Length: 165
DNA sequence: AACAGGATGCAA
DNA sequence: TGCATCCTGTTT
Image (cartoon, rainbow, N blue to C red):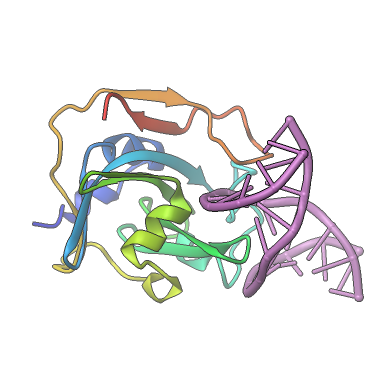
């Protein structure tokens, strides 16, 4: 069963932590989330939403529970989940997934394996029985670090990684 | 450790 | 019009 609306409508950093160990389901495929990062609006210079809403980042400003997908470096897609209320930009980047016995370590690889593209941008995970988050590992141990792959706002400890996969 | 591949958004 | 980018695989 998809997690209910209240799971998403919270502070993006809290949701990023809580997504560690949860199960992501897309069609026939499902995997355990092993790595996430939180991105926020006005106070986060690394966020696509830092300079306000644009056609690309508009989803980040919308209501929680929606998927934000963008293309990076011309060949990879990255999947995010919006968590905060309308007007407060937010997104949790899904950076790692344990799918079958394969550890997809990296947001680009993960989207490639699941077949996530720009077509998935703007889909809601709430009350969705094809694409959603559900229960996974109980009380998973995880590590908190700074975010990687960015040049701005590198000091924020907003990355969460599942331990001993 | 360095970089090419390559599309897109946004600043200029 | 130019350039930086929430990445990855391949080559030094």
